[in-house]
Length: 377
Image (cartoon, rainbow, N blue to C red; front, side):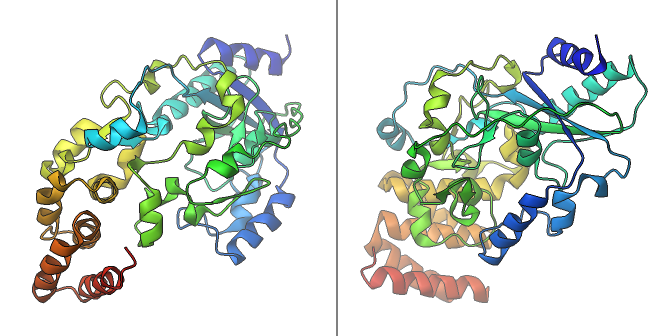
């Protein structure tokens, strides 16, 4: 058995679903695409600014010869009969499958380190592992390694497991034969483009990330009013484009129990965060990937969901939010209040404008009043 075959065998033994290999050559074709994306203002604040670092593996490891890419499915079998209509009435919001179980950064990093130990039983080598933590574009590594192809929604799609896969990679100084990239198999299907609530997917694996709901649930930037409405009851992430993908409807399910939503069942109680301390939040939700943004951003998203549900039973929570210590919570509470009860909202916000001490928040409240009084909503 040669080294590559041995690595494949060891990866399967430790519970890695997919593995592929690529060289360490620069991603020259991707560089121009990233530059164009930046010029068109379709990038985000979460991305590495240095495009050279994003496209040149040897900038991270000068003696890199091969990259080992891994994928683990998080498409776990969870029975959920809650329809969107029922969810609207249940005062619960959706968590993306990527944040159902234990933080995937931890799981995949541990798997990569475990794989490195296995490889060292055969050959001594140097390596660096990354799971969403390095500047390189991990999806490009996955594509070059034969893990899958770019879907029109820019997700990596694998023949066996679909697109609900977490990706990690290991830079190594081992010389391994690279795998061949897989040809795109999306064909004429436009399900993901048609289903995207905000029109963020433009096709040909081009996505305007600033309109993507997954991004909107994480950013600290001000979310445009019309996009808040498109978020519905999504509290962290968005799976819409993946759920409508026909390939995902016939894939093999993942078996890693770490990704089961044992605590949340994939939902979050919208009112809960209003009375929860940061310590309590970390204790209950600190295990999940979505917790990295902290309680306030998820609380903001719950407020947006309340505004979209328009249930007056939530007014006490929203009005309480007008006096929150966080300026973000005060601003979004004002928006949600106007969505739920425009007349009451205008009356209360006029009152709170005089009490507001932060200039930026006061200006936002004035802007909201003009927007809603102008019969925009």
